[in-house]
Length: 195
Length: 251
Length: 71
Image 1 (cartoon, rainbow over the protein chains, first blue to last red):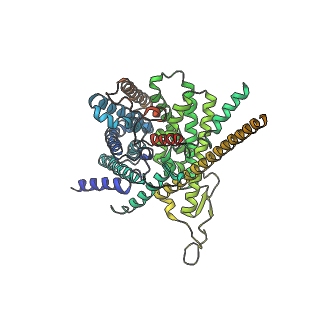
Image 2 (spheres, chains in turn red, yellow, blue):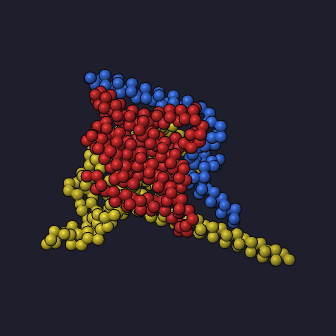
Image 3 (tube, helix red, strand yellow):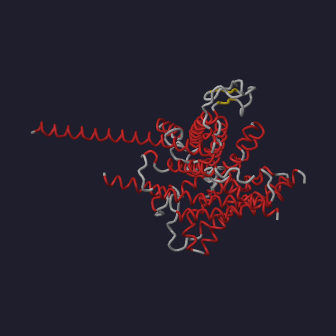
């Protein structure tokens, strides 16, 4: 019981308090670049979620049961990026072959996930801070749900920005960053929620 | 011939510094720019390590560009970059432990940095070794000054003081400059004056500072464009007026 | 495990992962996209013929085009 509670608390804290985008700054490029279509933001978020979970599941045993016993933990980054890139290709291949409709919504985002810092960031944090398996899973789950929530909220907010008269220099990315700053302030309110 | 070549070298070096600044104009590499700019020194250190990775991966990619088959270019680039990031990580851990611990996971995240991969694909894969080296240097310097400026703003406004020599601690004790916050304490143990705004140290402050910097850059570019357009229009009108004058004179 | 074995293991791991990545990458690139999705690509190079309206690059480009037409 205690384990379940701490698992859920860890998920919440990785999702809201230590949000990927707004306080850990992973995946800003895709966060800014995905634009103001809520639907495409949601697809992007789902794709990232899936890859993060898969990467966590593969990389955890690879690090703790292969790299560490062999005495070569310094190869972690190289191994992780290869695993993540292969995973993305394999998932992409699977989608391409089986489901054209899914490919239509996710297809353009798949190559971008390899270079999304969120995936490598989660996996690297897991091994850098020596998290146990359950906390690693919670990190993966919380991070990806947090990414999904924030990227969808952000797309909604930018949709509303469309009709407003913004100074010419602020158009595009600068105003998006200011919006992100306001969101980050709102998310600061979650601080201290989980002791 | 020689002049043209020299011009090209110069362009590939200078483009990255201002005209095509990777952070401020191309808007790439936002994650480290936001995350490691809490203080000037970590930002500068990140810029240095970034430049090292960029230059070395550019050189190797451009050396290998004729050996790598077209089809598997991206995987090869990723491996080259990841190798250099591993090397940089080990060097930083050995020689700059303070910087290594304050950069944390963002040192590893250089692997997926859009700028490094982008320069390999867009420049080093098609150009000679020397040009790629210069391009790496230019882009590295451009990125370094941009994030250092960000770090400077965030440290001065957020902490009120400017610390020099804490990360690069080769010269003894760090130097703390009081700018917006006094380093001497009064009777109650509070600083004499304190005008620092702590939001600049928070994530929200990072977003605001970067957003304003990009806006300023965009405003400058817009202004330049407008001036050029006005000049062009003036030149056209002058030419027209002259033409009518000439025509009138002919009559 | 002594140093030589670890060294060999490191090389084996990297090479195996690299082969997996390269093979999956090549297969992915060679697989034709399903019908109706041939134009789905992202990146400055491919933006000329992209029609994803949510993309920022798309919007910026079309704004500029419209302005130029007006002028």
